[in-house]
Image 1 (cartoon, helix red, strand yellow):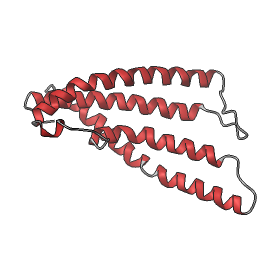
Image 2: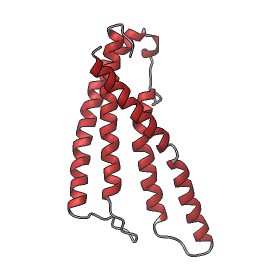
Image 3: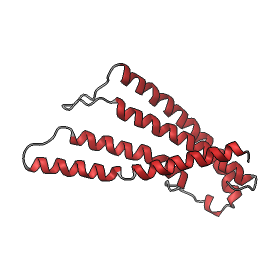
Length: 168
């Protein structure tokens, strides 16, 4: 495989691995927010921001951890035949199906970027009592989809290397 492709795979996978390990701790942030919400309700001074902030934290956890999940092949898969194939056969199938994933992610990146730009231009806010601005979470969503797309390209390069009998 060309050196640029090996360098690309290593760079993207190292970045997504580190980001995924950081995103992993967002569950603790979400639990702290929900605990704070419960405590304030006990004392009858509920905070308006806790539910939405917990939702935003969950979205960040999911979107920033997804590329690492894709990289580690730990996503849910129904493989009736796939597990019986050779590594080369699996790589052929993965190389074929990754194009559907890349098409989907390309549309999602385009749409999320468009929505993020709109959110910046109009200072979009959530129509709730707290009324937080939405651009920070939309930036995270767009970044998550972009990183998923870059990880899908890295998987394609890995599959091509496997088909060629090479190791990255």
